[in-house]
Image (cartoon, rainbow, N blue to C red):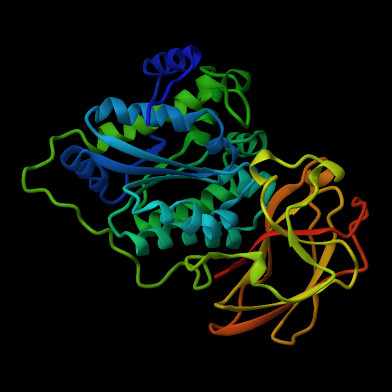
Length: 394
């Protein structure tokens, strides 16, 4: 795959190589040689990028791809772009199998979710850990030789937290996972805060939550520096890939490391519900292009309901929640119905992709979900709509 960068991005990369970079915000943990050995010796490699809009955009990802081409010019790379705007680490853990692992064993995985866990999902610590640990543990169970890098990007609130001498909650939680599993991290958020405090960068120059080429180049340069630090010496002739150690116990027993998507047509006993491509031209609110052809489970009448059989410890739904998003009520194994408001603060003008969990602490085994549309809806919403891309189970 050939990667072309804009002239501005190339210049930005060049400029950042001369910028002050102590390496204090680059943490090399565990072993980080497996991907290098495969790239050097087999001349092949699968590199995947999992994250939100910062990953999906024309930003740090293509710059890192170019860095890899420069370092390994004879290697045939397969690059997987698994960035989806607005999604958090919870959604990432559930779509990992379909969007990344199904493409084949990953040699090098870059993960980015700190900003979306903060400003989109508003996750508490538990959810930050369950999502990120789910991604890391699932990846390593699928291929224990996978090298992984976690990067922390930054938004204005997180920047202010760093400048106040505190660690933003998603960064702290993701770092706990990284330390547990020996994962290298790129603390771009702290690097940006340090440079701004030192008067060497402004937030406007960096480019904001979705960075400009210069901001993305800072991140790419830090990743390049990580590789230089890890791969400073030539590989010994007898070096072999080494399986990364997997902790016997996860940080959270119910982390989403068994996460998977369940197609909406697996639901049964549908009443006033259909599985179809919505008529988006007649529905208020923007639907992003990537979703407009998807068949969704749809309902908009109070009392509409379904049944879903599933196995595991958690059940939820990956939905598009727009201006008309309703409230659903979920009952597992005949238990009481619990309401779940689908409307999000970003739903006002957008059919916002988000994952909602109905129950994430079930005993292992087979379960039955009953889901119905409530007669109530959020006061900001205009209707009772439910649109399910996938059910999610762990």
